[in-house]
Image 1 (cartoon, rainbow, N blue to C red):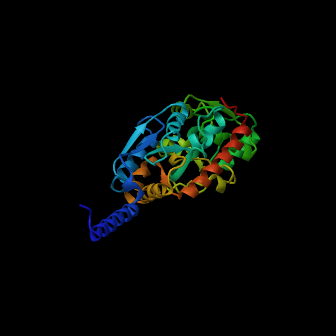
Image 2 (tube, rainbow, N blue to C red; image 1 turned 60 degrees about the vertical axis):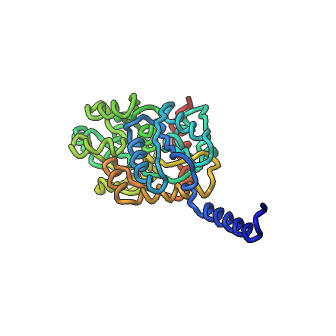
Image 3 (tube, rainbow, N blue to C red; image 1 turned 60 degrees about the horizontal axis):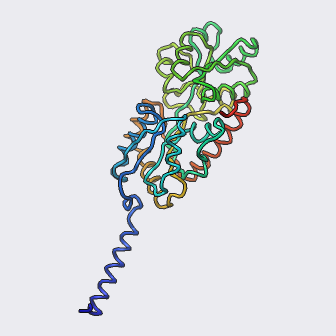
Length: 330
């Protein structure tokens, strides 16, 4: 028996109301399955720890978040996996200064484009780098500031060296930028990672380095390292007495470790907005701030457009540094 006109009318109204209700739901409520957050580095590192803190913080708004570690090729492997994933906003990656600003100039055949192949969601945090010396060497050479270091280098050409975690590392690029900006010379000594470089600095085998503040903080506080300046545009909240390189006289030396969230290219705008809202709210919460503080990670959430502009500026900056240092892509 055919439905009556009144029944048909009620069915149309009900269907229309259901459609309207579905469209009013947040984009993340309509998504299916858990959100996958790829960390392109091994478990236990700072990016991994921060990703897991955020996964826990957004579960009420985004549901279950699965953190998956996909290390390899300096972070390129995991980042490329996300670039090739479906653009539904269900797979995102914790990218970093290395994967999205430095590696494009160090790898001749990068498998992804750091801008075209991704949808920026938000910057997550920044960790200052710090110019440090072996404390005994600083005392012996009467160096108490970045200006003193530059003055000594100019008065004693070719006497200083500096260490980094390897060719093309953030510490290497910061050192080359400092040499260029200050007009000094120092021999670069690359090590096979940050840990052996730190040991060499503590042993007095190298004169100075640009280290991650989170890694250097304990030795600074113990008096084994002399901190001269941080490389961020603002003073570090963990060590507010330390001047910035800009305040010391070299504003061009602005190099920090940053990381942020990206999806593959083409993620729907509504989904991006939902992800941005959830993660930026988490980053502004006192709970997340307190958990990031021991890692010296300062939350720095942005809008997607602000993050895109930031990534473009970082790409341009590191292109200049890499080329000026004469580092050839591999």
